[in-house]
Amino acid sequence: MKTLFSEDSKTDVTENVTETTTYKRVDLILSLLKSNNRLTIDEIAEKLNITRCTVIRDIEKLKNNELIKRIGPAKGGYWQLINK
Image 1 (cartoon, rainbow, N blue to C red):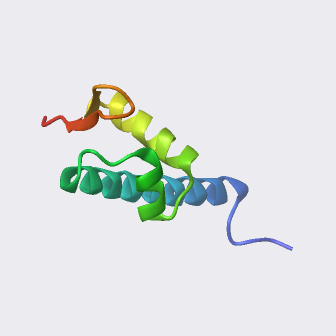
Image 2 (tube, rainbow, N blue to C red; image 1 turned 180 degrees about the vertical axis):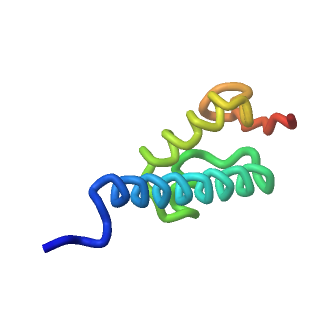
């Protein structure tokens, strides 16, 4: 039986959906940090109802893209948003 979608198109759709979800989540993280730059990774995870590992991965993306930077230590530090 022939299917309407090829395996390649299924993969493309999955990648696009995943990428879109990631962008939305990263935007939410940035929004949270704009309102409170002292949020911890655990607090972000709780507010967005996602895992700590997901927040860490998204924070790394933001840091690698030079959108945020950590100032100070893990305890007592804060996030600095970088305007480009």
